[in-house]
Length: 333
Image (cartoon, rainbow, N blue to C red):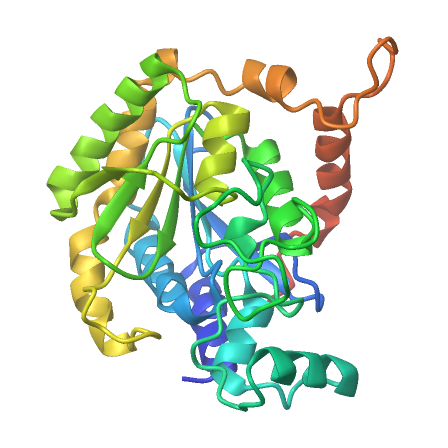
């Protein structure tokens, strides 16, 4: 598969009646495409994939999910956002190599980190050699596998939330206010939930929801340990909402998992979005997706300055400026 073929799978959803819009931008200026199914009122679920370059099969999984749920009468009482490919630059490096890059300095930088090899099929990072799922401000840099020098995987970045893709996903999450988030990764056929420092009551809540996902998919549910800086972790720590990481594909499969494995992965996960929405509605009284944004997201706000615009408000205002990035009726990506 080439990057263009992958992108065509996402963009092709427009021909089936789904509206695509821009959830943000990558370092190289690629659109991070998303769609929505169901109702914009009521609880929302956010499902994202492809944050690791070589795990692009998760973007294809989300394409199939969105296609299946479009105009599905069972999506009611709320809605589901799909962010297909959070790391488009990394996916293109993984799929096409580095010849598409126009900057020789960047090419040499990536080659050096890849031990001089032009085979980038195992690549996980973005174009800045940052592992995006270690870059979120949630106990940043404290993970057991974290590295602190640019690398094809596990490099946390030079500071939290440093990467454009990470900030885009944060902005989009603050704007859409999901009650539950799910991140799709490969591999292992397992679901991770919870995070260090989470309240006891929220852990009980998240475990209960997670057990429903486990029963549906057959994947064991495991509490997160010795892993930090991920999107799931940020959602739990900063927003106090249930968030899960699904590692799909059998452990025996090599990276990157080929598209021949997609049917089996899809069949085990096809009903996850509907179940997530059902749980978001069921637990709506226990998930406060307004106050935590104000109470917990106060980075950069100076104390003793009550009129200082909040971090959350600045993020939402910035996102509103990006609304022009939505597809018009006459525009296709």
